[in-house]
Image (cartoon, rainbow, N blue to C red; front, side):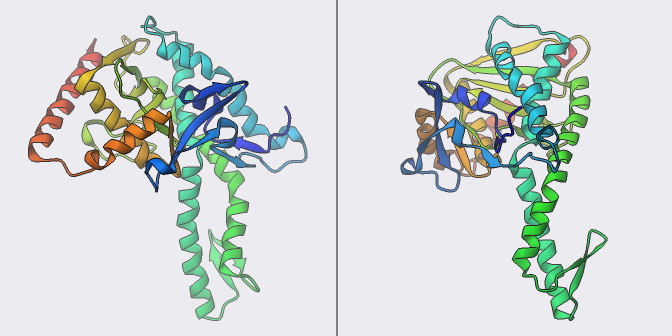
Length: 331
C-alpha cells in the first residue's frame, strides 16, 4: 500500500452518493454549520473534504507499520461500501445473509467512531485540564505538573507548547482506541441490531455532514453516545436513510424493514434527520445544492420551540413508531 498522507475520516465512497460526477472526480456541496446561509454554500471535490493529514498514521519504522489503521479501514470497510450501499438501496432486497448483516453494522459503527469530532472533543477537554494544572504550577513556583500520574516538565514551555505536545503525542493512542472501541461495539450490536431503510419518494432530500452517523436513545432516553442501546442513523444519499435499531432477535435479524415516505411523512423525516446532522456536525453540512438550500429555508422554522399542539402530534408519532418497532421485534 502506498503511504497515504491525506487521510479521509469520512470515506469518499460514502460522500460520492451525495455528489455529482464530472470526469473521474466527484463534487459535493458544503455549508459551514456555524454559518447556515445560502451565500456560504461552496463546492468541493470529495478528494479535498473530510480529511486530515496523518490522522491514522502510527509511529513505525516501516510503511506497513505506519499505515496499519489506514489500511484496515480501507481494506475492510471502504472497499466494500459500494456493496453495502447497493444492498441497502435495492428495494427488492428484503433479507440478507449473516455476513452481509455484519458488514453493514460494522461499516456504520466504524464510521461513527473514526471521525475527528471525538478526538477534538477529547483534546478540548484536556486542554482545559492542562490549562488549570499549568496555572496552578506557575502560581506556586513549580516547573512541572502531574498529568495522568506522570511528572511533566513545564520549564521554558508556554501553555500552548504543552497543549500542542499532548495533542501530538496522544493522537496514535486515540486512533487505536477509536478502532478498538468500535470493534467492541460491533460485537454487541451484531447480537441485537435490526436494519431499517427509509426512502423518500417525493421532493425532500436528506443532507449529511462531516460526522454523518447520528444517534438517538430509544423512547427518548438520554444515553451516552457509545451505548449499544442507541439507534444509529446514517443518511445514505439524498433519498435514503439507514437506521440500526437494537430490537433484533433470531427471527428478524436478517430482514431489512423498508418504509417509503411521501407528503408530510417525508418532510418530517427530512427535517428530523437534517437537524440531527446539524447537531452532530463538527464543521460543515454536506449534500446537494438543492438539499442544503432546502435545509436553510426551513432552519428557522424547524428550530423554534414546539407549540403544545405540535408536541402532542409528535408524541403520537413517537408512540406509533415505538409500537411499530415493538411489532417488528416480535415478528
